[in-house]
Amino acid sequence: TFVSAFTVLCGARTDLPDRHICCVFWLNIAAALIQILTAIVMVGWIMSIFWGMDMVILATERRCRAAESDLH
Image 1 (cartoon, one colour):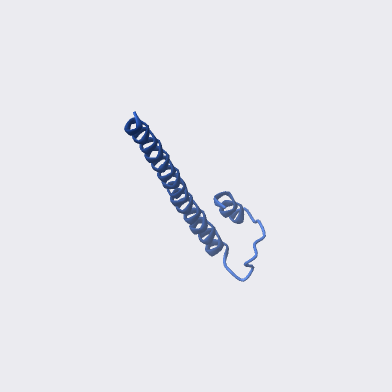
Image 2 (tube, rainbow, N blue to C red; image 1 turned 135 degrees about the vertical axis):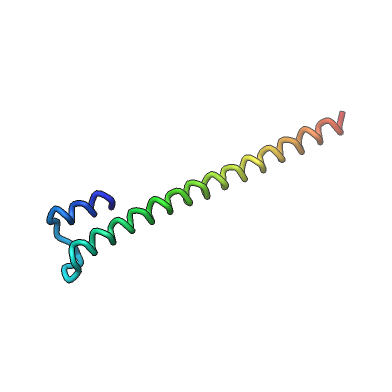
């Protein structure tokens, strides 16, 4: 998306022929920035899911070890 913003300045055709080239350029730049910010949020969200899974796994292992030590 970021590269396509600059190709508009070089004369590439767009889906917005009624808009000025400069407007299309800035729309593409804005879309690229939004995509970058969304990617950061998505990575953080995925990392938090994995961290939650690790916490559940560790808690389950600790409970199993505690149950084994109570039996002995």
